[in-house]
Every structure is written in structure tokens, then in C-alpha cells.
Image 1: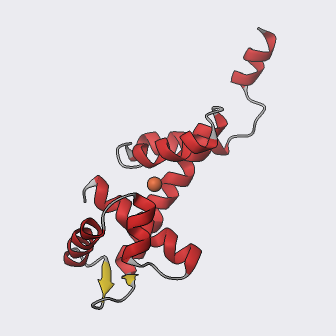
Image 2: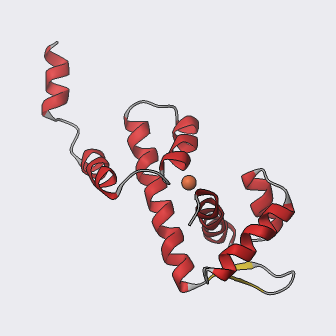
Length: 131
Ligand code: FE2
């Protein structure tokens, strides 16, 4: 799946979590794209059996779509936490996490997860303190 389709899927998932429904209009607003672009993406996501949408209805995730969307959002949350831990301002961390979430390997993400979940007092931070 392309990066941008993952972004659409993630956004639909976030809207359903936050507002209980995902409408084409809200997806367009949040992603700063035009409505026809959303409609085009929905058509692609439907072909991949990731979403369902009745004409003019809300966008719904299939079980497969929900699983994949939750995975993208999980990567986003992890990468944002990682960047915030590096003292990146929250807004920038959020934007950059959304770019990084599509390109990093599973191995790198696993190491980042270890780093984020690791207790604060580490050898590295001790080294820094003695400097
Ligand atoms: Fe994201």
C-alpha cells in the first residue's frame, strides 16, 4: 500500500475513534486535501477491501482495514513518543512521526520501542551526567 493510502486509512481510524464516524468532508479537512482526492483514495481502499462506504454514507473500516489502521497509528504513537523523548516539540514530533511511520523497517521500529520503553536512568544518561 502506498504511503498516502496508509495516511487515509490512519485518518479514518482516528476520526472513528474521536468522533464515532468518518465522513469524506472531515477526512479532507484534516488531511488538507480536496474532497475528490478523498473519494479517489476511498475507491482504492475499497478495492483492497480495507473500507466500505455506501453512496454518500460514512466511511467504515473492514476488520482487515481496522487492523492495518491500528498498526499505522501504533507506529505513529511510538515514533511521536520517541521524538518527544528527544525533546522535539510536540507539533513537529507529530508531523515527523507521520512521515517516518511509512518508511522505517520493523527492526528499527523494534529498537525504537525498546528505547522508548526503557527506564529513564540508563548508562547513556549517566555518561551524560558525568560529562
Ligand atoms: Fe500518522
